[in-house]
Every structure is written in structure tokens, then in C-alpha cells.
Length: 232
Image (cartoon, helix red, strand yellow):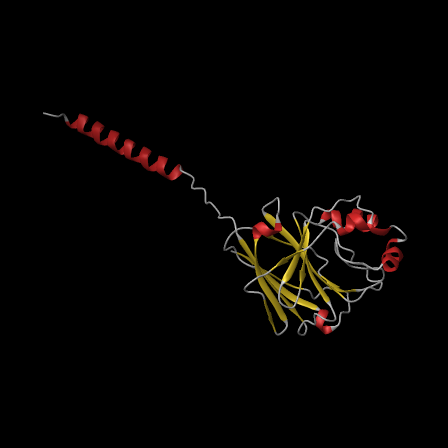
């Protein structure tokens, strides 16, 4: 016959064991794993429908925050490997030429995308900050990227590109948009000078923005109004 005192001890022991199990279970920390994104979708809206015969449209991207010439009165924009006006460049750089723009700007970029009427061209970096000759400049070549879902719908350009095509070294995409016109000094029509960023996590909330703080007085077809970037 079990003594009543022993019964209580057994019950108490069982309760202690149960509480220990529950406590141990609650103490477990569940680490949520985020899937890396494999594609990025961009949608850029202008004040009116883009005009590819009159303006150039670019998406500049980087692994970290990069530099753009946002000077309203002394700018001349082109990208690595693209033809350029020597006089305009020398005027803006004070005779510094290619080495000046590579040292101050291009070397901080991971690459550039040129948006066209039906497709895009991609120019990948890195771009050396000591680039100073035409031979070195034109060695940076662009490649045509044919995209099935590339669309120009009224005032919006949209497309999806694989993350791998951008050859990024990190898990965050930094980006900006630029529009230009012609080869003269001050050809920049508009740009997003506040560099944007988005983490490359699949199905995370999209990044949206307005360019209402831009000081550039762009023509309507080159005026960047807003953008949406999402990662899948």
C-alpha cells in the first residue's frame, strides 16, 4: 500500500517534469529563413509617354551607395563604353577628361542599364577609377538583354530581369534612374539623386518612390515621376 505522502511526492515530481518539458519547449528560438530573390521587376513612370528618339533612359545600380553628378549647372551624363562629346566632357570636368568621371562616379557603380523602346542593354562593371583613354573606355561593352515582358505602357516602362544578370556581390540592390538629352553640357534632364535601395528577398514588400524633390526641370517625356521595384 502506497503511503499518501509518497503519492504526493510522485504527483509533485510529475508536475515538475511536465513544467520542465513545457519550459524547454518554449525556450526554443525559431529562426525564420528568408528566400533569396531571383528576379527583380522595375516599373518607372514618367510625366508623359517616353520618347526614345529624343531622350536616353538609364537605370544605374550598385552594391552600395554610389555617386552621380547632380549639379544642375554643370553636368554631362553618359555611361561607360558609350560614345561621348569630348568638348562637353572637358568643359564639365575642367579638362579632367575620362579619368575624372571614372574616379568620381563610374568606379562607384556596379553597372548601368539603358532602357530602349523594345529591350534593354546592360553594361556591367566594375569600372576602374584610373580609366583615362578612349581604348579603356570603349572596352566596357554593353550586351543586349531580350526580355519577354518588357513593356512601354503609356507613360510607364516595366520589365523583369534576373538578379544574376546584375552580378551583385551583396544582398542589397542600390539604384537610381537618369534621363538625358543630346551631347551638350547640361544634358541631364532628370535623375533620382537620393539613391534608393531594396533587399534582395523574395516576395518582400515592393519599394515605391516619388521623384517630387528633383530640382531638374525636365521635359515631360523625360520627367521621372515615380517608380516601383519588387523582388521575386
